[in-house]
Amino acid sequence: MAEPKIPRDLLPADPRFGSGPSRIRRDVVASLAEPGSVMGTSHRQPPVRHVVAAIREELRELYDLPAGYEVALGNGGATLFWDMATVCLVEKRAATGVYGEFTRKFSSALQRAPFLADPAVFHAEPGKLRLPQAVSGVDTYAWAHNETSTGVVAPIRRPDDTDDDSLVLIDATSAAGGIAADVSTTDAYYFSPQKNLSSDGGLWLAILSPAAIERSNKMTSSARWVPQMLDLSLAVTNSRADQTLNTPALATLIMLEAQCRWLLDQGGMAWAALRTASTSGTLYRWAEDNPLTTPFVTDPALRSPVVVTIDIDESVDAAQLCARARANGILDIEPYRKLGRNQIRVATFSSIEPSDVEALSACLDWLLEHHD
Image (cartoon, rainbow, N blue to C red; front, side, top):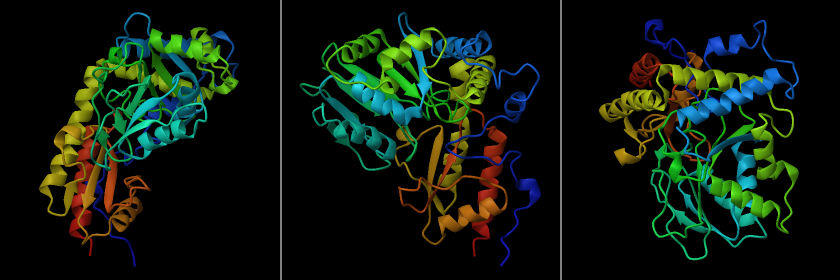
């Protein structure tokens, strides 16, 4: 049986709505093959190092970094940074907020570390939020600015009554470049660039406070064994020279720099935050107005402006809805695979045009009307 065909005049101009890897602007992809591109050249030479320097400076400007804060980067993505933070930033014990799959993964990495006490875990069910509170003997507090699996956004602030030398680590992978943040309240605001920053995976970046750098130096000079790949102090040393420890994917760096520059040209993080709030608001209003849909995150204050999760009425098979959308060229609105809900998940990252989100809502209306 043929899939129903959405009228062409309803379709979005760009049908990519994945929550990662995300939409990359087509002109940026085309620039990789332009004359003068650094593709295929040494990452130890000035042309590539100038790209890295530009990324670090543009992130400094985007986030208005306080004095002493530094931008570090390296290969491996946020998953590697979880292990790096485990060995280089947590001294004895951490407290974590766990309210989805990605916050759970970092907490699990801390749990597995044989040289750390088990983390104090502050748990909330998917779609809800719970942040860590002060715990005696805890030297590090960690949670995500935006939980990509569930579409929950969290505030960024230091927990009350913590020790003066405790660190705050924030996973900003799906928030960086799309949600405003006061990084002065954090010690490591870390992310991969394949979401709002419209690049590819396999790279981590971290905005580090002087206290985080000092803690890393302390841990790497202690008796604790730290593999070179997980040595944050070594990564900081290389980053100060506008390099990475080992060979990076140059396309990832080029696309990241282009997106950072584009965001600054549009108006910086203030512009990006307004844009994502507007585009996500279009979908949340649609979900509230359609009798077959409901925002998964019930508390409006916790609804992510960059990852929108929408429950579909049980009379409609969400998997079939996503398959029919895909058959019409609308890509990657499937829910997070481990959440197990009858829902869709739509990215409203900073590169996604508001008009495309409006078109998507019209297409979803059409598919729901024709779901039988």
